[in-house]
Length: 554
Image (tube, rainbow, N blue to C red; front, side):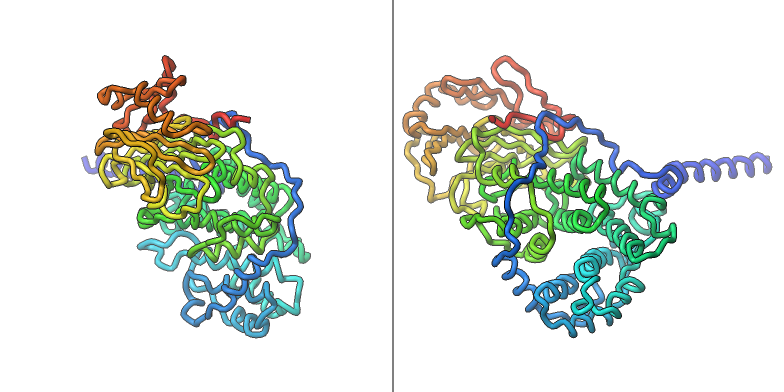
């Protein structure tokens, strides 16, 4: 009996060991090469990401210089040098202005490695050094061959001390999780992008060791594999506040300084991220669903998200004057957008301000995520707020928003709707279709909007650029229908005539002379609120939607 118990014990231990090995992401990557970041494969859809670039970009920007000036004037304290923060960006700004060069070099030479790369958590309290590492990498590559700006001893200190990641040990997982917990996109790109770029610098300086060879040690292959996934399957941390800003920063480093193949792939990922923004925004108003973080739920500003800060810096190098230049608290990201060479594709810039014939676009983000849905005309854009998929999903649902060609920059200044109740965790705000939006709650209308008619729960408003908005609003149901180039008062009467029964409005709406839309504002969180168009049943399983699909109206 004792022998049987001993054998059973070893069988159990052996089984645990096998399970550990099978599920250990790091070991898989060492043995098999690149690891798939997400078990997701999205179809591409019928909307391609534009990459063509023919625009003439200016070499200088007054806006960029103003960002450098503001950042350079910020103080750098001893405490700031031993934790995550803005110290390295402040030093970068001073170097860009060729300001306080001796002092900046002294500070850089005094710096130490204060932690380790990767997510910080209970067993890894000194994580997040990769936030510092990424900007130090930028400093090396921008000034490493200018000894009058980055002194030789400073460069040596960077390479031998501060840039601690090198070689081919690509890390996919959160530190001290036994290789079992996948790291986030921004940490992988910051850490491994910096490792790759240090290797590349050392090799270009003449070191021929295999250790630093990004092709031989597998670094290039693994970075390319990760970015190809992001390009074809989208981002896990889509629209994240604050993490998308750090993902973009890491990609900007690779787009600027990597090998041609890696540079091109990084550029294509940036183009996808930007195209997604352009499709779901109007005049830099952008309020999409996002994954991470719940602490950012109370943000109500429409024009100052971190992604927008990069975009405003890029636009400053074009002959475009009339756009919202407010960057709010995102100046650190505006700095990186301004000082790096990446410039977006032509069609992206056009789409920010001109929707041409309008569009209707569905953006898939894979299983257990939230889609992005937008409907645009020449003078408006409806943006779906998405849906939370359970507390662990970390998805922040936003209201459905109607953006117009105006100066609104806060949620309180635009038409928006959501529901049921006030808790975004309970919302399914995916109810957007062509020129139409619905939700299980009342419609909020800003007081400045011109009301032209009202009857019971119905109201009509006239917006800029001949946009007419018809609203039906009760505590349990909100509907918004948008028309262009027709008087609001006239179409108001037509809409009421076509939709006389309040009970029918709970699940269907008829456009005058147009389609009959079916919807379920209380739909389960894995289903699109929209149900049908006339007799055609819609594909409501947004977990299986393509990356980018719809009608650009061109």
